[in-house]
Length: 270
Image (cartoon, rainbow, N blue to C red; front, side, top):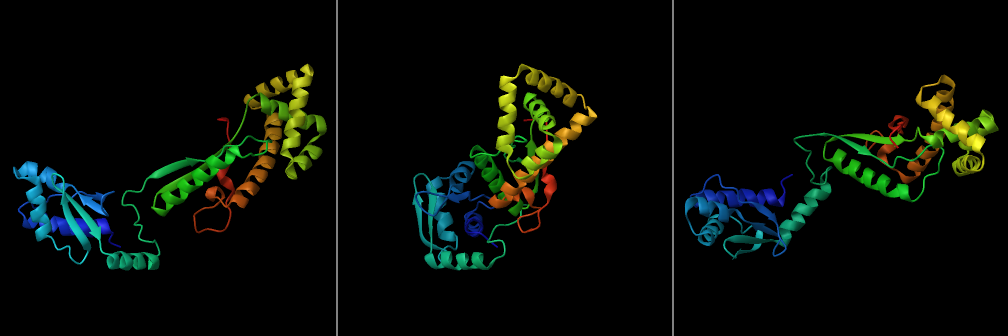
């Protein structure tokens, strides 16, 4: 679908060619003084050694703009200000409304773009601060995918620091079964606060937590298994929240309704 900028550029380019400046770029852009402004006459006139205002007037006279433009004015040293006819706007709007892509073309140079979402911490409830990065990230994903880019949607769950050692030790204290149940019902806040309270009040628990972090970072098999329990239960909660928000982090594409669960991953970057 041809845009207004493209239509105006084509007509004005023909006007430049007729005025002896073939190949000149009309430089059409949106304007606060009219619908569009073309600045090309200034650069071309300098190259040809002509008066830019006179060149702009000749271009307008030779270009076929009557069927597109309501008014065409020469302003300043050679700007061409254009106001588009209302019937033309109406026709193009109707064409956009019936176009599957609403007049937005696919990019001719697709990129691969990584978008990072809210990066919540495991075993800790999400809060209002996570909304901003989630919604902004999702908006960026939708725009980029609509334009034809390949988007990698990432959500890194932290962390490997002292809080995780604290959480693992609390899990061991209350038992894996009870901990898994508490986390599975989405009560991450209570679980985290209980662990934090013990960490702050018990030097013995704090020492165990720090030692557990060393084991975690060293790849200890049992510690990694317990860490996985915390991460998986947290992911289930996070994905339920993302489902309610309707974000594409858990979708494979803007038009896909099935949920792909592999895009939220544990990470040591938080």
